[in-house]
Length: 215
Image (cartoon, rainbow, N blue to C red; front, side, top):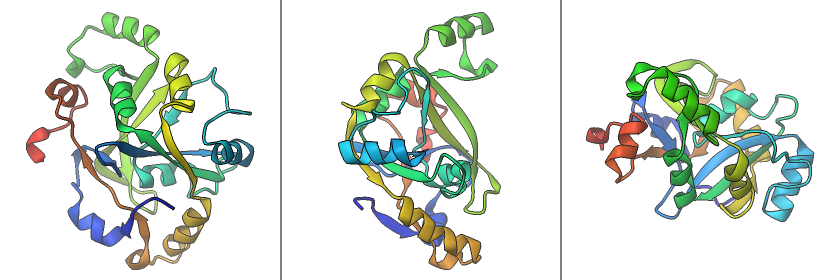
């Protein structure tokens, strides 16, 4: 695997405990996001290094940069149809483009637009954004929020092929680490090394509710 790994307990000491944070493995050129699929879709993607075959370009696909949040959603790869866990190395410029074009999935007054304007935006948008409670390895909610991004139309087409640098099948790694969780042995749990992401673009940080003062 190309993923960089680190003990969960060591990372926990460094992570923010509450607030809006994009927790991810990234550098200037790329960022890792996670998805889970049934084996036919996952194996095609790994073999060909793009999404095709039975992958649908007609429905919205959701990406998650936070490993543990993905593990919460797919039950550590145990849920039906989510057995193949993929680490997708994306171009950072593509990830930023998604966020710049994203519209929040649900309305709240902090968006600084009317509900009518938001409804118009969301009907036209090809990128959705939402913040959900993050989770610990056992699936318990924590105060920090985790981001997920939904893509459709031209964005899902670019995501499926030209935005990708590498697709890794990490299913075996996920199963191995899940055993430490099942055994209540978090001291030995190893997960991808993640840190919080902030952008140089003030307006984008503001849109995403990211607090640049914490960096």
